[in-house]
Length: 639
Image (tube, rainbow, N blue to C red; front, side, top):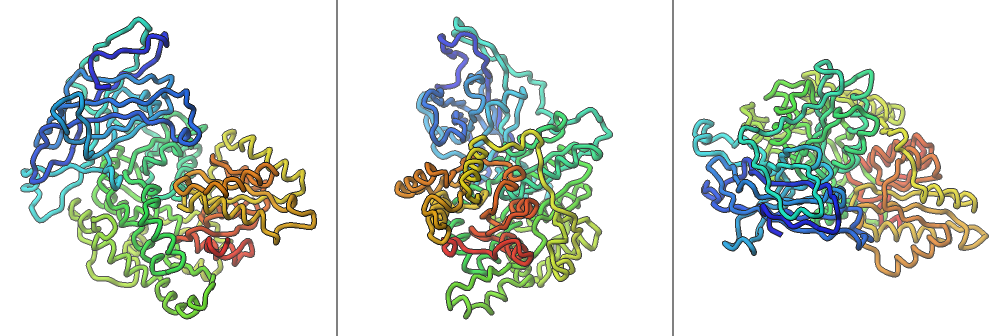
């Protein structure tokens, strides 16, 4: 269906609440090669069903549709304007949980009826329910290949004024979309979209308040990564918003965590926790073939572990331009940054004069060994592995990656020079110089870890950080387990079984490996008693987000048999660990801060396995030293 002033509606539905959506323009779209404008642009809009409907979707759901906006012309500043009056209609009652994906590209054909985006330049995505909340939206455009944000091209005049040797100031590209809510009757057959007010500018973002007016401080949180890198920031956000601190918080993170941010608003004053996209998609990146190969073999080669740790900041350098944009627009009183955003936070603070505070979830700069010497070769290469694990080697490798722009094609000095800042030192040494500079200037570096779980040597090693205590996110009435989970645990207890959970969070382990681990554990003779195969432990296996590696039919059948005997529950929805872990006897986890601290709080032992990246090995070693669990074990060794 092409966007048109004439839209036929379903006459059999009666009164319907719909959204009338029009694409107005694209802001700061990069020019074509040799700074040429793009004469004909188009936007293709596709309806996407909810992600929860991907498995076992209801066939009665409405079919998705595609709409197009054509004949957009780009000006020398990079903006693209589309024909006024074109629109499409979405039934919000039927598709509130659906998403709209806007793909932009060059018109592939002169004929409007068969035009399509053959090679999209970028895309934006938003849920229909979110779209209904505001009349005007600026949707971030991301690269369809890397999912990093797209930035506009400087004009020749801007390059001349800035100086040809300086790097471009990176302005994020947005798609401007206008939304109107309408109620249509069955007899309505056509509709004319009102033209937008020419005087209306872009919407003012970041105006959230909750009764405190100007007295409420505004805080911006910067974090990127997996769920374990984002959830502690949401717990921090809730603490900052609620009394006695009474702040308004804006969190800048990846679009894939928007739903997690929305769930964290439970019980908070309206408008006090807002989301702004950082661009990028860590989960998408970890599921690529190359990343999976690297992380999987990283279990065995410490040089790969050191390389991943060295690139943890440089990999997110493409978000600098967007973080700068939001800092200018939101005007926070101070910024709280995670360990993957240190350089970006320093650039914002230096160029905009905003105080910063570190909230460091991974304080150690050492690659922790697993202690899992499975083969004679592991013993022979141990001295070399020790050199690769040292903080000095990781520091030098980090400086090389950040100065050369190995991970994302951007170096730290490209980012700094674009903001008119002094360059980062070009020589290499064996210290983390940006952390040293933060300590020298008295920037607080907070670590939400209870010092009681660390030895005296580790406390001394981390003396530049301020150790506090573990931070847990609690949502009150929303922290309830699903009935399926509680019934499974009750049935297992009634049968005299111990209950264990297996969760690897967003780490790319794969559903097949998780189910294989559960089935082998539950059928192993070592875990049976004299009562036979119907005795032994029960297990809850969390497989949400692991569908990229589906199990084979034989394994699925074995899992069904164990489920019918009350031995195995395959959970496809996340559960609040604060409510679940006290009901368990043990947990097999990936070794992140969240899972480990929840297990320590609940008083249950932890077996750490998975891909064992960065702090996961470190936490496994700490738990083992405390006598609360095993050292890190690779997945093949677990099997």
